[in-house]
Length: 136
Image 1 (cartoon, rainbow, N blue to C red):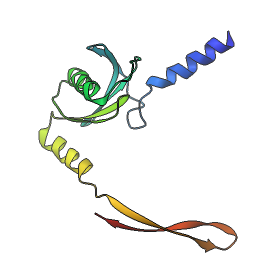
Image 2 (image 1 turned 135 degrees about the vertical axis):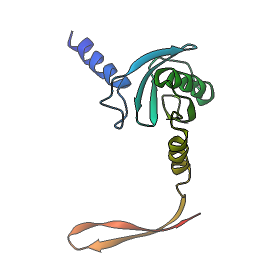
Image 3 (image 1 turned 180 degrees about the horizontal axis):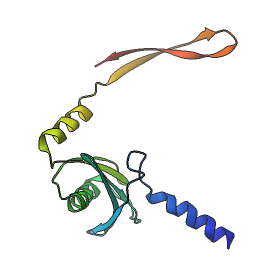
Image 4 (image 1 turned 90 degrees about the horizontal axis):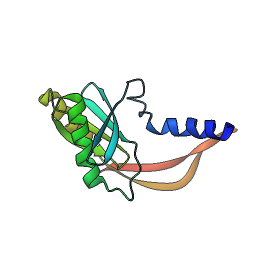
């Protein structure tokens, strides 16, 4: 009895939303064999795939998650980012705000860092590793 209760509690946490979407109630929807819990907040929607599928790839899951988010939100989806388990869609209800949000997400600069392999000494406290980073 205790094992089954513990298993139920562990599995219940699998479909919980990510921190940004956690307090929002989910709408469960099925699209072409994939079942998602969809949450909408602001200009973003999140689809958490809750059914098991053998070796899912993001390609087909991405399209299904986009359809699920569009059906729940009532908005077109500008882009879908994520992996085969959790995807986030940028809503296009307010197209200008959605495109601005998407541009911000993809235009964050990348950095190349070199580890100098030394630790700064902070006295009696553990130090920290030193890196030199440049954007590219």
